[in-house]
Length: 216
View 1 (cartoon, one colour):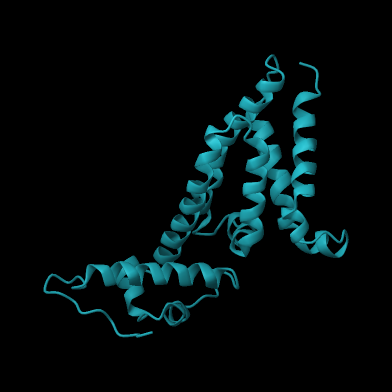
View 2 (cartoon, helix red, strand yellow):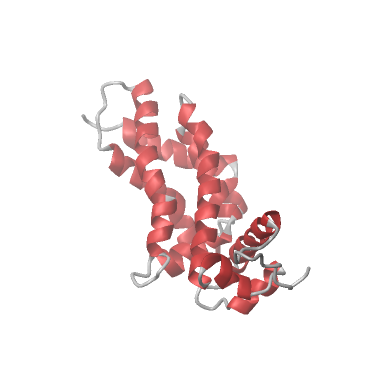
């Protein structure tokens, strides 16, 4: 790949708009790949440029700074995954497909576990707000309604705190990845098991039992 900077027009923008968008895409993809391997702080601008095959000076040109590139990359990453969630919104029984959906994303994207550990749990991280607003906040707005819909199909008279129920389900799904070393070394539960039908069924049954088998 060429590391040459794009030809700049008289107005100060790349003459080839298609090439401009392609270079932006390459830089965002390179950012995601590097963040699966190391922390945001340890990644250098030069590494980003080399990984993308783009002159590192274009990071400032397109995004203003390394932080701007990382934020744009994370927003793109989370928006694309949230878009995959949309078909679940129309399902009559969306909870088990949701469990499968989240488990698959967490399993296939090491970047998420790293972001939770390095950025979300760090009060001083400049990426914390971007990450939380990009995916967790959207899930918090969507998941309670999905759970309520499925529970009411089985017991229409049940009324619980749907927000608490949704938070509990997300905790059940995320905790195995936050504590991955303990899960693997002490319990012998592999990453592959967490995307197997048996795990999905286990989480679904435990969660729905907690929602349905209670006094109300």
